[in-house]
Length: 368
Image 1 (tube, helix red, strand yellow):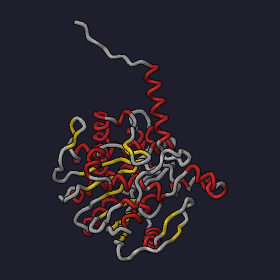
Image 2 (cartoon, rainbow, N blue to C red):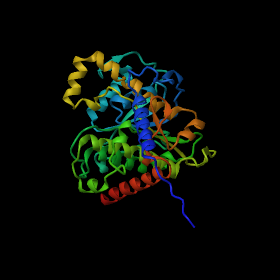
Image 3 (cartoon, helix red, strand yellow):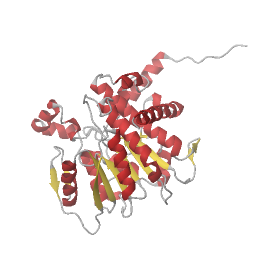
Image 4 (tube, one colour):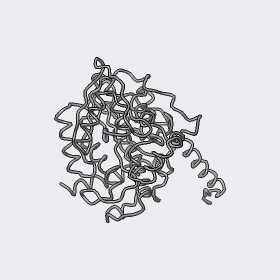
């Protein structure tokens, strides 16, 4: 008996890889690509009264813009930030109707107090697992459920280590967020009319992660590697976390058809926000210089934080029927299900999520 084998045509594989790279670039959210534009805007956002929204890194960038959208529509917004001073400034700006322009400078317009919600500061340093645990405890003391969790905060291109000795970017962007999601699962799974949502802010840069997505041996050693490689690795990890939450707590889908709502289910979606002008880049001296000397060019390339926040807000607000189909997926620019790297698709993605979650849980257990 002969056994059939499947061979891969190297030319076809090369073209498939090139096509994936092209699609990823086009859907990265560059402002000079005129046919890739948001088709959902804040005018489409429903009233948010009686909803509880938790946002990491809510004091600046897309996190602040997301907080503004929910606050002005009546939600109870919990801002998780490292700095009490920056959080106080953000809360004051939110109440004054501050909106950041492409240079991250605030421009103000009046807020309708009759429709505004509330905004509260929760101290949280994602680079310190003990701080994350304390933040989750404070959230549980203040609210009895969480309707939307935006795992939004992140660092880019920065070296160094977290309080527990992990590489700073992975420790902040992935490990800290995994711990927060894990601790908030009881509040996210509490039964309610609409399932809760976890929106993980990933990036098109996830395609630059090392083979296999995560170099666990390097993480265990706390080794310092190329900063941009580490960033891609962390964004790959954000997609993998979204896959895990979907696989274990999301709707059950078979042959592309998802089940009716189940008690405690969570819609979990990874999102690329676009090429956004925020303080994420401002530790790069070149970026700081370009932003103030070539502002016209900046506008051709980058969007404002308000535009950059639309992808994640849309993922949190799109109709439940659509969110059920999006759960476990990756959204690119703009408001469209995208294509993640091959090692995050299907069974490979589920396995990647399980491996990453298990590793993160083991790190947390070491700190107890």
